[in-house]
Length: 205
Image 1: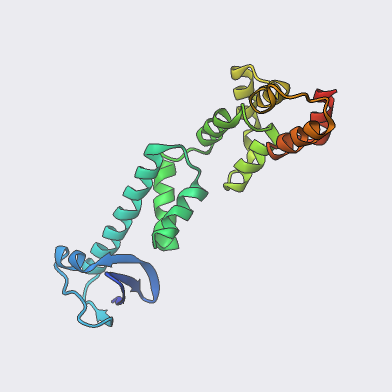
Image 2 (image 1 turned 120 degrees about the horizontal axis):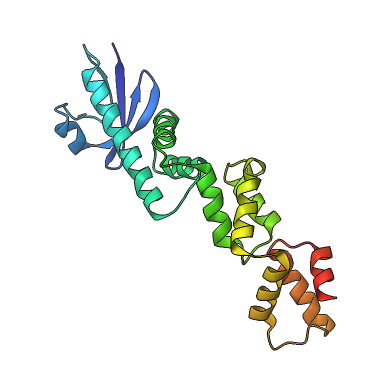
């Protein structure tokens, strides 16, 4: 037997099953599932069977899953980003972890594919070390996918010197980099794109 608590917040009801938070649903969702909507802002229910609880959970799960598919239809994301997006939408850790597991199983989520896509997107505007740090910050172990990053650099035929050259041409095309003030600005600019001082100085000299 499950105890379900719904706590109203605005137009939504936060759902707890045996004090474990699942997510939020609307009053119309109760009606759609054939369950009486709460009459008060904070109400407990006890069911004789699990069927209504399962129906509520399935509804919340399906919403989280569809949200994830929508995010992944626009871009490659790692699991960590999808998790954060779902948490921001009010879904519980239990629901989110179940969704993530299914997304991996169905290949909608693929960390290697994300690494390749991210590297191709930023290969001409950031240093490799910065790309790897940003991949790491999104919850993917970049060192596990260095072979993929290597392949992208090989496919694109790009070196870090090429990237520095392109960035300088776009930003400082008509300026004299021998001018110490302009050179300092260029160094700061390239540093923000992840290049080390030694790498920048070697290129400029």
